Length: 505
Image 1 (spheres, rainbow, N blue to C red):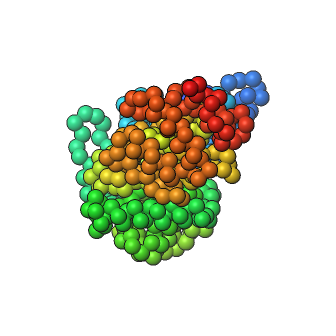
Image 2: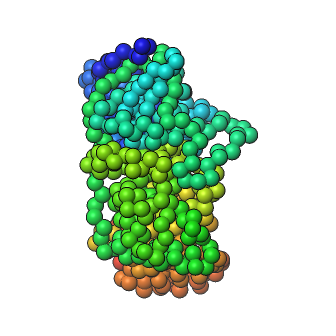
Image 3: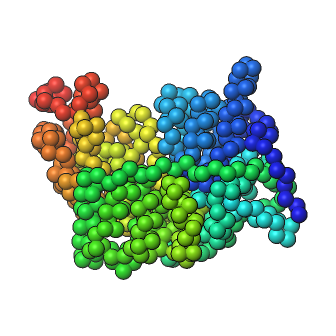
């Protein structure tokens, strides 16, 4: 057999040089390599101790596990990083300027690599549950997440390292639909017309000489268990369910072909779970970038008919349970590369209803989903814009306040804008739904104020009343638009006593 030799993680790390670009497989902690990145971090520490520079550039499918982002950031081993991350250690590095971070829509990531915009990929590092030789080629069977693994396998000019992780069951074989979008221009249509329609292969195929070594591992994925639903998320879920049901009754969306996308995190997971509990919402499909624990439970219960995802971002316990019952999911669950899970063409064709999470929303419907206070990176835009701009119904959810009521999620003006008012159809808090479709700017503002926390509604109404005096289509007092943010910065609480400090009448 022409299988590449087994090497250690340290041997793989020794081949990587300062300044090289690493393409890393997986999507979130799901399917991410866990052995070689810590060895690269150890190499960086050794080089730094010897007074030699050692930093690499890292591009991934989305966020990645702590063994990659956390270890490399702590070792000061990353110079440039894209396109998305949720790790706290690397977030500190972004916000201190130690890592140059490029925030990027996930649907653009693989295309940018193929076009050469990101730069030439030197090495690929991916995780697999099995590698098989068939007719002189190697078939790489991936694990719980794909990301940009197919693209980096084909582009890595120096070769690919494969971590074959026996913790993941080979029963996953057949659960992937791996398809790469053609290079520009005049590309063929991506012929997905149903959520789990198969158009690709269940493996990545490469030449044996392109694999520089296989590292054997037995390590669980690093996804954390979701926090339980709260009263706030339950109420948001019920409002969202009522909103979807009303849209079906109005004929705006199809109950028979209802297909949902849900963002990342415990809040999004809980809201989707609450939707599943509402029997007025018909059984539905999912086409999304990340499948978390509540959707997986709903598949088992039959509430979710089928689900396409870029990753299974669930706890180790739930993932092993899925492996044990994998045959129950065949034909109902597919794992796809991020350029397919987040493809604008497919999102629009399937008529998806998107459910994403906002950090803050301003009174005219702009959404900030990435930066705290407009300056500190939280996670990155990820795939939320891919879905928001192309979904049939684009919604954002958020609790009306954070930090024990000291921060309002509804503000006069977003401190940073990822999603403009033109693509945001509705916003949902625990106090209701602001349906923004067909509304003028002033009507949007009034609707959004009504779903703010009661402590902040008078303050927002006063701002709007004062701003209306200045005229224009969108009413603002520019020197006061960020007064709530400024008050929090100075006093630790957004609740102004009045606007007189900022508005000179």
